[in-house]
Image (cartoon, rainbow, N blue to C red; front, top):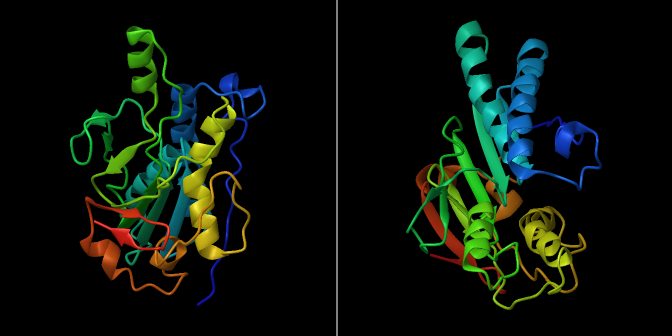
Length: 243
C-alpha cells in the first residue's frame, strides 16, 4: 500500500500574535489558531482529494488542529457522500487542551480530554512531569498547575504514559520544559527509527510495540486501538507497557 505524507506548516498561527518567532507562544491563543488551521486543512483535502484513510499526527496545541480536522472531514464527507469508507486515525503527542477537565483516572492532578471523538482509532503519548518548576507562593503554584495541561488522559483513545522512570532533563528553565514536552514526540520518532537522536539527558531506551507500530503504515490491523479506548499503560525502560 502506498502512502502520501503531508506536513501542515502552521508556525505563524502557532506564534503569539502571529508575527513573533514560533517559540514565543501564548498557549490558549495558539489553541484557538489551531482550530482555524484545522478547518482550513480539512476543507483543502475534502476539496482536492478523496483519501479513504487519514492518519493525523500532532504535538501539543497541534492536537486541536488534527481533532478539528477530523471532525470537519466527517462533516464534509457526510455532506458530499463521496468517501463512504473514510477511516481516521489520530495520534496525539503530549496533547494540550485548555481548559481541560480534572480526572482521578490515574492521579487527581491529571486532566481529562475528549480529543478523538471523531476518529476511528486514537493513540496518545504523554509525559506527566510538570512543565513548570514549583514555586513557594501557593496562588502562583495553583495558577501554574492550571496552565500545565499537557498531562492529559484521553477518554476516546489508548493512552501511553512515556514518563521516564528516572528524572532526566536539565533542571534549568526553559530547557527543562522543552526537554520534558519533547519526550512524547521523540518517543514516537524513535518508534519509527530507533537511531533517531534523543535528548542525552532524557534517554529513550526502547519503544516496544507502541508508537508507529500501532498504525496501518506500521503494519497494525488496528484491533488493539479499537478495544483499548479510555485505557492507559506506562512504558518502562525495557519496552513493556504495563497497565
